[in-house]
Image (tube, rainbow, N blue to C red; front, side):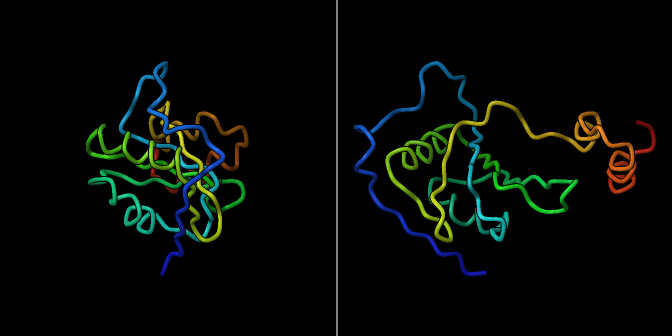
Length: 137
């Protein structure tokens, strides 16, 4: 799929910011407002501009059966994550006409077992367990 990307300087924001000082930085960024038609490969291609990407993850909403509108990008190096974060904080990136919002990810990726633990619907728990071949819950 060809992805439409537009970048513009954000004149409404203050002078260029550095990464937040009060946050333990990780190599992963949380992207908000990701259009649902965007794939993990599309995001990887876009974010490799700042350095090698180790992982891209767009969670699935198990109850609705569709992608969530947020994603995680994990870089191989912290410096690359900081560079991408700073760029996106000081510029607007439109991906398929939607302005991406970013922050450093605070928690790691959830495993299927974790998703089962937080799921309240018994039928959905059973579906997730079968899909990921988890024998005991």
